[in-house]
Length: 71
Image: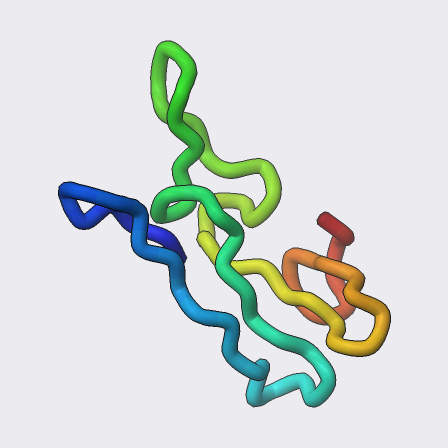
């Protein structure tokens, strides 16, 4: 999950999902599960505050988790 180091946003590298072959864990792009920019921080709607989503390698489909809701 991405985080702010005081100077820039650091993104988590993409890694293969150990439990589900053919899927990768990718950084959602939000900051620690929080979306900033409004009057107050809100939980990210893409990852539900987790900071990581999953992508199927072959089809490039993204989901909250393998077999879960599409992003």
